[in-house]
Image (cartoon, rainbow, N blue to C red):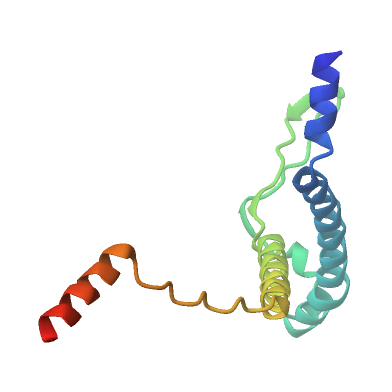
Length: 142
């Protein structure tokens, strides 16, 4: 029973709960950002690039080969999948990352701005050693 109590105390710590909420919100924010980029930004970029879906842009290294059968139905040539560098999909994700990074920068900047600046601590008075040295100095001036 002690281990269960210890786990409950660990799970209910404020930082852990806050972090769990942050992960859930981050996942939801990621979906919103993906939807925004895929549904609004990239179609516009695609139109500027010739009207094609931007995710379809790629460099084909080896084209797809379809399966070829002979008259008897035996496979004469096996099918081979296309090998391509999908740079359009990569660029879409890179733009999404930049948007997320910028938004997070703005959020952190706003949070830092809302935090009240702590006043500088008042200078500490002289230490006992400094007081003694001042007394000696004053005594020597007399």
